[in-house]
Amino acid sequence: MQRIVVIGAGHASGQLLDSLRRAGSEAHITLVGEESWLPYQRPPLSKKFLSGELTAERLAFRPESFYEKHQIHTRLSCRAVSIDRDIQTVSLAGGETLAYDLLALTTGTRVRELAIPGAELAGVHYLRGIDDALGLQADWQGRDNVCVIGGGFIGLEVAASARTLGKNVTVVEMMDRLMARAVSPGMSEYFLGLHTRNGAHVMCSTGVSELLGTDGRVSGVRLSDGREIPTDVVVVGIGVVPNQELAQEAGLACDNGILVDEFARTSDPKIVSAGDCTNHPNSLLGRRLRLESVHNALEQAKSAAASLMGEKLAYAQVPWFWSDQYNSKLQMVGLSEGFDRAVQRGNPDEDKFSLFYYRGDVLIAIDSVNRPGDHMPGKKLLAAGISPTPEQAADPEFPLKSLL
Ligand SMILES: Cc1cc2nc3c(=O)[nH]c(=O)nc-3n(C[C@H](O)[C@H](O)[C@H](O)COP(=O)(O)OP(=O)(O)OC[C@H]3O[C@@H](n4cnc5c(N)ncnc54)[C@H](O)[C@@H]3O)c2cc1C
Image (cartoon, rainbow, N blue to C red):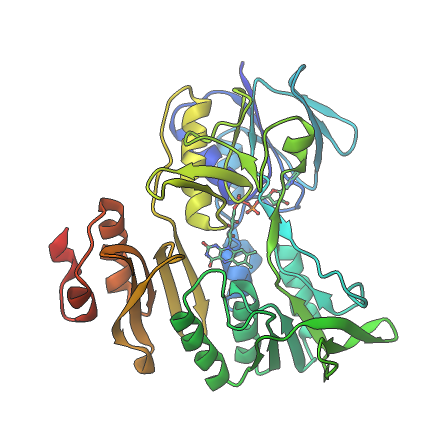
């Protein structure tokens, strides 16, 4: 019987396993995951989970019975430490080896760590997995002051959850605006206003030079201009790095992620890879990129499963992403980087608007706040390469669907 080993139990692996069995794969499948949880949804961790509206049990990608029913052998709390491609084995941290005929790498990313004095103090948190979220929840209970370092999606979602729980929140961001890597200046400005209105103190263009401690626990943050902010808890959200070392040490081609083709195949024909850890081509965008999104993990995993089945399903989709902060749902489709014109539709003062981004006459992305009616047809317009005129985009009554 063919043996498939999947390393990394996250979003991409959950989809990959589902797709394999749906396609009729009868392979002996082993899932190796270093966390103690079966594949689960990470997005709620910084949102409804942290604010106490969802429990860990509700996050599972598939119930435990799915793995039993489909005879998927799970090896949790178990880290894969090396791959020997010549004899096709994976070594696990305990010394055991697993033989494979085909291998899937869905190792995701890990948090970038703060490299300043005091970073090791108790009360300093990162957020990647359920265990991190449980640790943060337990730690900030009964503590009022939270300092979030990093004004990206995760930092801002944590800030919104903390404000919802009534905590005093300070966000410190090094760049001159929020979420600068992902959204336009217009959208950054809206979110700065949103957080400020909700009572968070946001400091942009501000670096952090040291975390200050008392008796081994964080008690303050020293900013690069010398000012000090007293705090009880620090949450660091300064980005992630791809888990590519396993692949790299096995001699697979890597460059800011594991290099794969549009069929999720690595440089070894017996190994596929999908999700946050890959650097992949996107024919719609005409370039390679690494994405950190659920949509990417799920869709690329379908291509990886097809490749494992000896079929070909090209992954070529317009990227999309979402973020929930307070009552504002941001939905993004396409990549706005490099736009030369942003057209506003709707009214930011009513927390309902979209920005349509153009390069020349071509629509390249849409960011919407509480306007799913723009996001949904927008996805289809971008996939089909159809651009509404800027006048049509600016008119909230113009039916975008009519262009499809
Ligand atoms: C707090 C938070 C909020 C988010 N919010 C959103 C959102 O709103 N929208 C959105 O689109 N995306 C969001 N994301 C991103 C999204 O969760 C990721 O893009 C997605 O999880 C990627 O899936 P993946 O399978 O590639 O990697 P992951 O889900 O990270 O899974 C990888 C798994 O592999 C394991 N692993 C790594 N190396 C090894 C090894 N050597 N041996 C064994 N196991 C290993 C890791 O521990 C991990 O469990 C969020 C992420 C976080 C952390």
